[in-house]
Image (tube, rainbow, N blue to C red; front, side, top):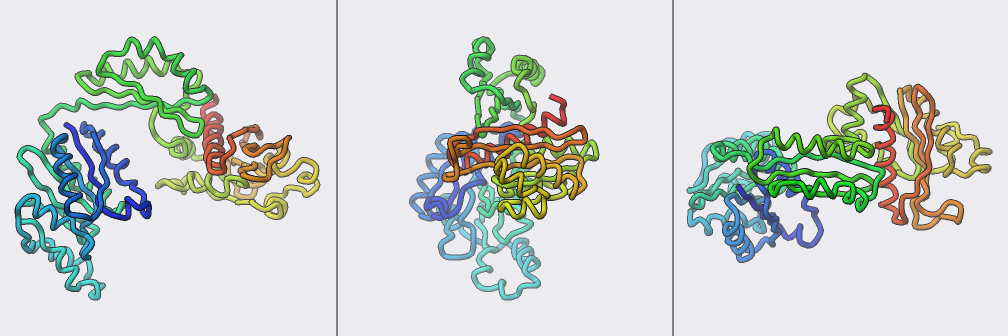
Length: 412
């Protein structure tokens, strides 16, 4: 089954808001065997929305829309959908009760505009939006389905997980799941070299299999996909063969973020980690603390951007900085060991580098980053050269830091 997403809102087209919803929806759809064919963003404009609906229905059996469901005049999605499906608005008592309960402690919100939220298209099937006032609407277009959801990410995700995905799964229960994905992650090899390594493997793949190369920040994700008639057992055999071919470069056989994989390994062992960051400015700390459950293994960070912080909080001698510079093996070793000691963790990671665009030298050009990993068995340090663009350098540094930690934890 094929689906399309239509995101509605002027803010998406002027760059004021970034569309993170579509990527998240695409992953969830694939999990239940629905292939996403196209994503379209449109203005809050009647003609634009109608044209997008016509085009989407010409290609897909399922259309998902996000945005434009608020109570203000610029939110026109509900009205346009009523016109498109030739149905009037009627009051829904269940939605009215839900909205009244939702804003019971905020009577100022229960005004004439909010009251328009309990008006719903008569022909639509209404599903509960537990955390918001905009009802979730399901329309049937012959054998095709349209689901309309709010654009606010946290509302949309709850709507998808609690209502839309279960609804679609029930509708598609008689259709076999013909979409499967398996992903592994490799590092330490160029994309072109990897393609040469896998040339014979790809030549032997049947037509329903597809191998995608997805490089980012020094990691290459290899996604093996099935679009057609193949059993999970057959897919697994191909996947295991792929793992064998790239074993020398393999760091993970799942599509989880590296910080999640590192966190799971630490949590399973009852071990902890801390960070001391200079050039990464807290990015590494943000990654390690980003996901639920991170308090089980992540203790904290010292963001030592200025030399005085390195000296006073991380015990880096000023003489060492003068002799070797802050971007040096000597300094990152002390940073890692000090933060591990002060925060009393099993492991720690330290970063110090030149992110640019200025500050480089012939000996230490922009992109030079030293890292250290302090462990119960000792401290390890390594120097990397990670490019010339500031954001690229810091993102790659975080990836290298996590890869290094993963190798330590897996004894690679």
